[in-house]
Length: 136
Image 1 (cartoon, rainbow, N blue to C red):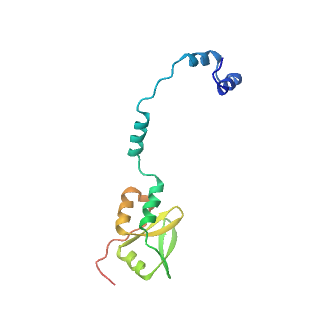
Image 2: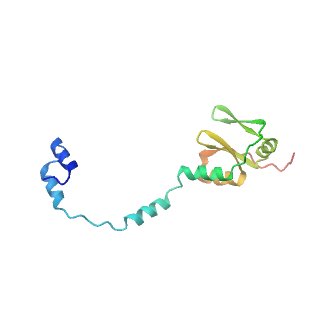
């Protein structure tokens, strides 16, 4: 007879035959060895999830309070904009700051954070101008 309700339902529906269920019932359960450790190692080797991208950006972003200027940039065939202050606009132009995408939003981050993102999440980086030696 079937071991549990699901197996009984599968047998009644004709998806599994009773003989196979009896064989499954007789087979002893094998102990799992190292399953959790293996899963942890695999999780450590995987790239960081998207949540860590947002965490990296939102812990290092440049606040845009009092932003009175629009900074326009292209994203594919479309022209996008982000509100910035005069200092932030200057930093973007000199390559000291970058624009990154988090979901549907854009944020400003310092250049060192943008370099980290370039290696880990290249699709998140939208604008990173080359460093300029001239100060305006």
